[in-house]
Image (cartoon, rainbow, N blue to C red):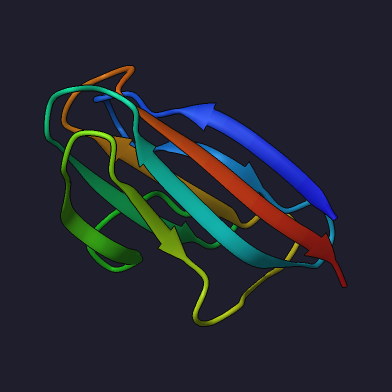
Length: 103
C-alpha cells in the first residue's frame, strides 16, 4: 500500500497521484486545514489526457474550514500513467492524501 500527500494549488489541476503499473485507489482525503472556506475539483485522467469536464468526478465541492472530504465508496482502478488530479480555489489551504495499492 502507498500513501501520497500533496497540497492543492489554485492553478490547473495538478497530479496528486500517478499510477505506476496497474493500481487501485482505496481512499482520497481532501482536508481544508485553513480557517477559510474553499472549493475543490477532482479528476480521474487517463494517461496522455488532460483534466477537463469529461473526466471530472467532484466538481466545485465546498469544504468548510477544517472539514475533510473522504472519497472511498468505490475503488478507482488505474492503468499505468493514469492520474488523479485536483485543484482548489485557494492555494495552500487543502491537503490531498491518496491511498493506493498495486494490482
